[in-house]
Length: 241
Length: 297
Image 1 (cartoon, each protein chain N blue to C red):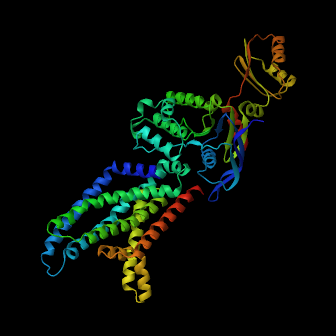
Image 2 (image 1 turned 60 degrees about the horizontal axis):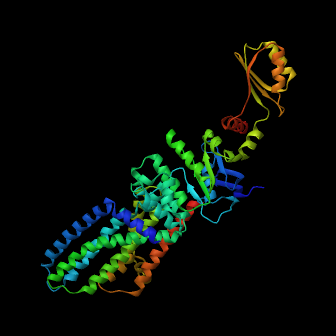
Image 3 (image 1 turned 180 degrees about the vertical axis):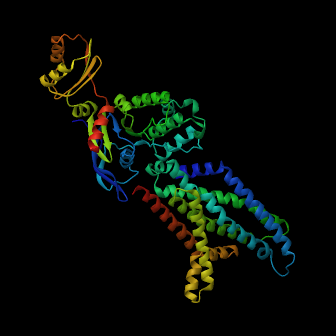
């Protein structure tokens, strides 16, 4: 698995796509951070966390709804088109190790991208901000949440041999899960509302951003990733039929 | 009986409703170079993918007499084009957990001077060599090559042929081709497949013998043969075909009996001077035409 992780990471770091996304990410986050800071002067009786960081982390999460499909859309598609997927599947590395290697390399990539945004809370630190617990929990939430987008992207790229189709499929699934959030908010029945609330990632992410870490969120994220890994492995196995 | 390295029994494969392979069976002897011949779309690649485990057969079985993984070069070599040659081979060695010596494989495949170059910048011939190298890196006993010479220039084809021959020492090789000349030069055994069915399989001489009933005799004379003499030839000998072109005569006999001496005598008796008389060996090209046309009828 480590060989696959290493190879994937090396390949992604040598492609311009990652650096282009990093530049776009830094520009948007930096610009919005500046605007939130300016805007926070208008409000009184509230905190920097509420005025600047929570909306900023929300924006980062939304950005990755677009970035994750772009980062992952080529993952299995390229392997299928070049025939290297069969090389991997015939090797002594199991399907799960292949998926895990690719997944972890993408999680490492998004962590590297996210680390660029640490400059924002660091700037706040110089003006006296010290609530690092919330910052830590928000970044953990971001990584877990974006991991879900990554695994959806990997699953979508295992389905097709066209990267555009793969990108659209993964974005559609991510959008579909987001719609569960709206359904949860508008559900008449309390229990149905709660179930939908549990099923969508945004509600779990919103707890993390507020520094409110709940154990069942970890269960949600790990089962989400596990389920889509299972789908991906089945999709790859079906190539042999 | 010779030990077999691969034994394919009654393999059947359907894609949707379309039958790609129909109950095919053949065996590959240990230590041999086995040619898998057939036109495009005959089912060669599908059979190879089933043997290597990339595809599952709908029915039938494949027995591989080797504990080591199979080295496989598909029609399009599986290469990570953004990697450099040495890194790629080391990666393949890692995922197959083999102990092969990259250094010796690089020299064997003639890749030593390009080992630090990115695969995408190599010519097609060199990419094909990297493809063979990745098949060797898994430390196989059996190597399967799917049309290894397609798209290469004549010089690269010659080198590839030499490379395949050099691998024969320690490996069993199954390779597919639709170039029959290549197979007749390289192979010890052949299997001929068309439209998902095996037409012939076995040692190359046996296959030839089975398919070529009778002899083809080419005779050059000092003058054209008269029509009366041709009729006489037909009546005196058991011939399936007789062609007369200028001063030369091509006779196809029925049965195994060597009648060259008798024909020579017949012609001399009728005052023809025989300048040459030789037996023509039917090459695979002709055999292939004969077999496939039989099936099409």
